[in-house]
Amino acid sequence: MLLFSTFMRTIKQTLRSNTRIVLIVGFPIGFTLVFAFIFGGESIVSGQDSTLSIGVINQDDGEYLTIGNLRDDFTDYSEPWFENTTLNPFFIGFGQLYIYCLEGETPVVISNKSIHITTFRTVREAELAVQSRAITLAIKIPHNFSYGILSGINSYERIINGLPLIDDPEIQNVNITIELLGDPSYLAFQTTQTEIETTMVRFQSIFYEVELEAGNFNTNFQNVISYELTQFDYFISGFLTFGLVLSSSSIAGILGDEREYRTLDRLKISNMHPIELLGGVSLTQIATGGAQLAIMMFTAYVLGFRGQGNPFNAFIVAMITIIPILGLGFFVSAFVPNGRDATGVIAMLSAPIGFVSGAFLPVPEIPLIPDLIPTASGSLRALQLWDFFPFYSSTTAIRNILLFDHNLNQVIPELVFLITSGCIFFIIGLIFFVWRVFKPEK
Image (cartoon, rainbow, N blue to C red; front, top):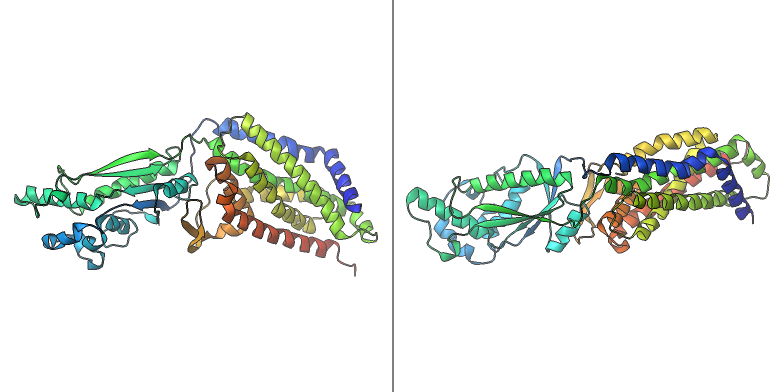
């Protein structure tokens, strides 16, 4: 009964405060309007990381077919790629050699950038990774890649010495078409595509530097996104989490008022248990947070948000985010015994939290353990430092659901991190509040 009474009282406190009403209702609408006005008609512009994340589907047959039988015929064709015998392309295939060169595993440098390669078994896995921004683009190395390189070497020798190194129909007049899978509305794709095409030219020049009839590299681009994302689409999906962080000012303000007006002092000598007070306040936060989410999502769709995923699934993830929101509110109100000041502290904290969560711009990768966390594409990614920050996991999961049509099963790793770290946030905030506010007076 006391729990329900506290809930009703804090709801009334919220509705009687113009400031809190503006934060819950007016702020999300206003901020959504700002995003729509500024970013609504432009393609996504995303920050660039110094490391390029690239996927590779290596279908090169060179390692498995008859290329090994041609090894002796090319032994005298000594170039830099042949100096490192542990990476002899006649044993591993020229496609794999290209991958090693991209990663900087060979003496030959074909890129001045740091490149992280994720290997995929199927094109579909790579497409899902591109859609979720786990990688910037994917390279599909064709089955005839090694034979194209050998065909170019043969043509080069024919021009230089008048005769090919070997007269074999499998390596005559073979050209190479490499498919690049990506999202053209993602600025990172454009710059990465240019870098990859440059590496292809440099890789080709290791073997021959003249224009030939065979062995030439061509690229074919495939768009894996069936619609174009705008900046508004990208940012508004992250703003759902950011808006909830701001809403924690409501719970901090209510508890601050209770301390400022010494209501809690009277509660200490009453029959009310701290859990009943905090439970009632938590129910208020859940109710107002749900209303705020509904308002934000409705406003976003009215203003042209083109999310492809299930908004109900995104709503579920956002509601789970209220767990660390409560912890944040409890923690701030434990140290700030004034409602207005507590609201201001939350407002100041919301901006850095928003940026660290990736709500506005992608955060730089800080990998801790490589190839540990499963992704929706079926591959593994590194455990990131940000995974332990619940608002980052929330933003990532909501964005993948709304923009890339992932279901809840595909964002399980993010949900696990969100729930685990969110509960830690909640427990820490609860402990500090009870310890500082309800501890026995000396």
